Amino acid sequence: MGRYPDLAGRAAIVTAGAVGIGGAIADGFADNGVSVAVVDKDPAAAHRKAAELTARGTGAVAIACDVTQSESVQQMVAEVLRRFGRIDILVNATGNRFGGMTTLTVSPEEWDTTFSLCLRSHYLCSRAVLPRMIEQGWGRIINISSDAGRLPVRLTSPAYAAAKAGVIGFTKHLALEVARQGITVNATVPGTTLTPRTRQSFALRPEGLKEREERNPLGRLAVPEEQAGIVVFLASDEARYITGAVMEVTGGLLMT
Ligand SMILES: NC(=O)c1ccc[n+]([C@@H]2O[C@H](COP(=O)([O-])OP(=O)(O)OC[C@H]3O[C@@H](n4cnc5c(N)ncnc54)[C@H](O)[C@@H]3O)[C@@H](O)[C@H]2O)c1
Image 1 (cartoon, rainbow, N blue to C red):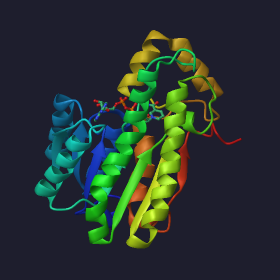
Image 2 (spheres, rainbow, N blue to C red):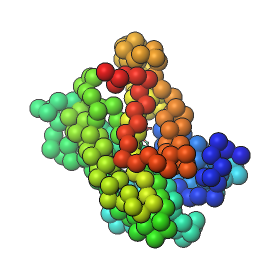
Image 3 (spheres, rainbow, N blue to C red):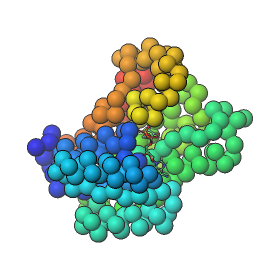
Image 4 (cartoon, rainbow, N blue to C red):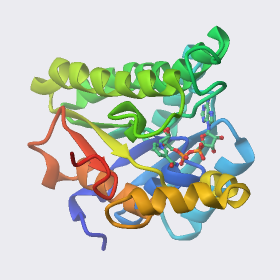
């Protein structure tokens, strides 16, 4: 039995759930008996993750979906309901940055792409699951923001910083909208985390890794499991009185 027995039998959608932080969240739910829809743009990666979860004895389904597209998101949610008969938890984990690191170098197209993946996707997926959660009188939505949206300790991308700050604003507004309907909505703020993608880029630039480790109060970067734990907690009954909250998981980077 997992750490949160109340989660057993629930059903979750994890977007960007095939790898990295989303993949670790999918694992964390599986450990607690939650059926997981692994929703990802990359069908092969989504199937690999769902097969891993199924082999561990959890209900899992892979759904290939571009969560920036309204119609695809509606179809994805209908498919999850068809497969699991319920949706209790939504984790919006999509987000990445595109293009220039400054306002002068990021193009309008890169700005829109970044906003679409980081923010529009969270709105579209939340909107698609809400009717069901309202009907059930229970739901958990957890949005993944970023330290970049909280405090720019280094240049990343103005579009990413703005969209990730937008995730926090959206989270709080939605939390207020549905607070009396049994649904909590929270955000987590990861600091740089050693996912396959970031490991690959640090392999090309080891001095970047060293600089970040030295700057971090804990002296190291997070691993995906350390981002997943708080998300599973927020979905559990232990977190029932927490809504509209922003949980920083940065090793103390943002403490001042
Ligand atoms: N990794 C970090 O250091 C870090 C730090 C702070 C915040 N974050 C945030 O955490 C979340 C996860 O980051 P990560 O680095 O683990 O993920 P990642 O960039 O490795 O990507 C995860 C998955 O997203 C999928 N994806 C991309 N576009 C999609 C789309 N349109 N629809 C559906 N799926 C799509 C990809 O196929 C991939 O499998 C993101 O929101 C990111 O902004 C990450």
